[in-house]
Image (cartoon, rainbow, N blue to C red; front, top):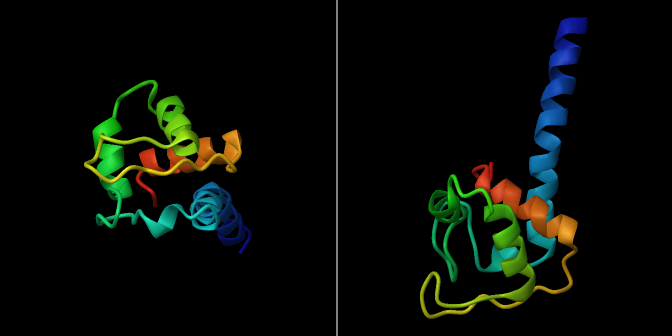
Length: 102
């Protein structure tokens, strides 16, 4: 019984950051234009992760883009700035995306 309880506690601790990051994305309107596995207005999170895979500066680069907005990378529709998201939340969401948005 103790082993099962420990396993459940470990699973909750591992999934908590991902859940929090998905929640951050939802409350900051990211999910209005992006989905995990399909293109909406913007690219899917899976496509973003694939494009930036292995780039050491991806978290910093994309967190800045979340806050400042941008255009021309994924087509003609610009990404609006989200200046109200904190630096920590922007980095958490970007890391979640780059880790597969699971």
